[in-house]
Image (cartoon, rainbow, N blue to C red; front, side, top):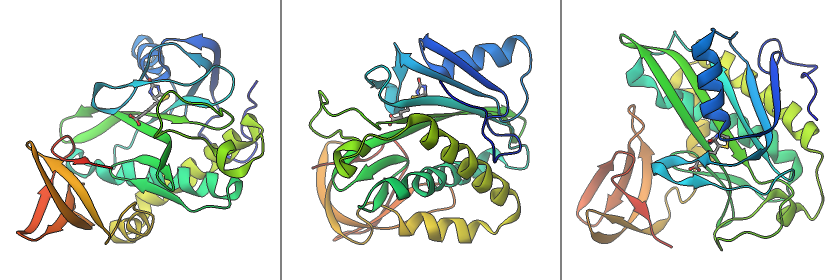
Length: 252
Ligand code: BTN
């Protein structure tokens, strides 16, 4: 079971725990749609039966061993065109919260996969609703592999596999609530350049040659930046290429 966070002001202060649900993102959307919920409301479950990931993928997590939850935010101070700033802030919050649990460095694989070494240990799915040019409601879905050992995909792993220690899910959750709130509050007041610098410092394969695929073509390049629209900038032998999400894939 999960406790109301002791050290946050609004993130997680309304906590909706369900033992099982289809998708916490979908459930939070439905609940908020039928009667508006306070900002910071969290839906968390032990068993997500049809978890959703980026690019229409499924998110699978063994029941009771991992964290699967969604947070409702209302970043009305952010224009829709700047929505990647929210991705960066939430990604940094996850890195901050998980860092004490592993000896290894946690990296962010663009746009917001959570990586340790070459393994994916978590992912973020942010679904925004717009009001004109602004973001009115944002459902921030986070899936983190914490105590699961075995995975069907060889690219996936967990905190336990790197720390060799079973972690208390509620304790990790409490840390996440605090760090999400801190990064979100900073997002309103701090210069976007500062956030981007920290995001780039945690970026997987920054300035390292890597194999990519785009439009059926494989090429080697080095990630050099993320632009103000959140597009990935890759330096190649044919010059700089800039990709939106779904336009490029990392090849192993
Ligand atoms: C990805 O890496 O593709 C993003 C995965 C996001 C999974 C989380 S688990 C909680 C929330 N509810 C969902 O259905 N998806 C997100």
